[in-house]
Length: 209
Length: 199
Image 1 (cartoon, chains in turn orange, yellow):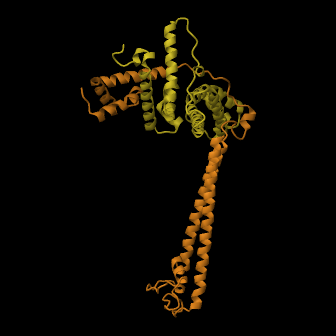
Image 2 (tube, rainbow over the protein chains, first blue to last red):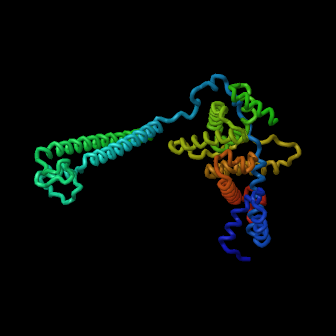
C-alpha cells in the first residue's frame, strides 16, 4: 500500500513515543491504524522496541571507587578537575575586553551626540564654518552662534545680528569637542585592535603547545 | 526510603557531610554510569562524577524538592557537556573517545547460559556502547537517561533542562539512529536486527 510521504514520516517519528506510552489516545489509534497497513513501520517499531530492550539490558557499570566527599574536598573552593586552560582564559579575557571597549565606544558616541544637541550645533556645521564654506542657513531654528557674522541670529536672545567675536568662541568649543571625541574613539579603536590581536596571538600560542 | 532520602537531604542542606555522603553512595552508580557513557572512558568519567558531587554539595541548600536523582544527573550532565566542550577546543583530545571493552563491566558468566548466547550478548553490549558513542551528545544523554537508566520522560526533561517535546524528539531520533547503527552491524547481531530476508 502507498502512503503519502509526509504522513508516513510523521507516523515513523511517533513510533518511539508510542512505544513508551507517551502518545494521546487518539493519536495512538491513528498510528495503530497505519501500522496495520504499513509493513515498514511495523518492522521499524519492532526494531526500535528491540533496541530499547537491549539498552535496558546493558550490564550495570561498576563504580571504580567511592565518590563520597572528604571534608577537605567538600571545603575546597574550586573543583579539583576541569580547570580552564590558559587559552580559554585568554579568549575569555579578550572577549570581555572587546565587550567593554565596544560599550565604551557606544557611550562616548552617544555622549558626543547628546553634547552636540545641547550645544545647538553640529560638527559638520562648525567644520564647514572653519573652512569658510559655510552658507547662511534659511532655517530659523538654526543655532544662534553658528550662523556667522553676516546672518541675523533668529534664535538668539537679543535678536540682534551676531558678531564675529561672539561666534568664534562657540566654534572653538565645537572644534575642541570633536578633537577630544575623535581622539577618544581612536584610542578605543587601537585598544580594541590590540585586544583582538592579543587574543589571536594567545590562540595560536595555545595551539602550538 | 523516600522519608530517609528527605531526611538526608534536609540534613545535607544544614551542612551535614555524612548525610550528603549517604546520598552520594546511593546515586554514585547512576551518576558514574551516565558520565562514563557520555565521556567514553574511565578517568574523565571519574573526574566528572567527583566534580558533580562537589558541585551538588555546594548547591544542595538550593535544592527545592522534586527528583533528587534528576537534579544530580542534571549537574553531572552539565559537567560532561563542559568536558566535551573542552575537548572540542583542544583537538588533540579525541572528540568522542571510542569506549574500549574494558570500560564497561560485563556480568559474570552464568553457569546456565550457553557460551554462544553469552558471546552474542556481550557482542551486542559492545555494539550498543559504540552506537551510543556515535550519537550527538543531546540524543545520547536522552537515550541513556530513558533507556539505560529508566527515567520517565518528565524526569529526563528535568535532568536535561529541556522541554517534554524536545525530550521526545531527542529520544526518538537517538533511538532511530541507534537502530540504524545496529542494523548496519547486522552480521554480528541477533536476527531481530537484520533486514528482512537475511534470516
